[in-house]
Image (tube, rainbow, N blue to C red; front, side):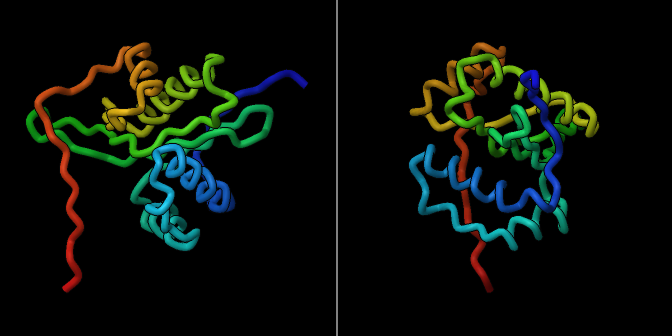
Length: 154
C-alpha cells in the first residue's frame, strides 16, 4: 500500500479520538489540567451546535492530527475569516513535510467554507511552531494584546 495523507471533516464517531487529540495538545502546551471537556460536551458544541469545524489528518488510515476553526468577522473590511483554535500534528509526523501539507489542506477547507483568511495565536515559548508559521509565510500581528474573560454565572 502506498503512503497516503488525507484531511477530512470530523464526524460524530471521531469524538473519542478528538478528545484524545485535544488532551495531547493540552499536554504539549503544558496545560493538561485545563483539558476538562467531556466527549458529550465536545459532541454538543461541535456536532449539535456546529460552533466549530474539526478537521482530522490521517496518514495511511491512522489519525495523526487535527485542527479546529470557527468563524470570525472583521467589521472594518466586512470580511469573514476563521480563527484557527487548535492545530496539532503528532510529533513523529513533524519535520517531514506533512505540516505544510496539513496547513495547505486546512486552507482549502477554509476557502471551501467561504472564508477569506485565517488567524491564530501561538504561545510565545513555542519556537518550533513560530518558525513553521514563518516558513509558510504567516505574519505576526503587532500592536495587540489578547485577553480572556470568563462570563460569570448569574
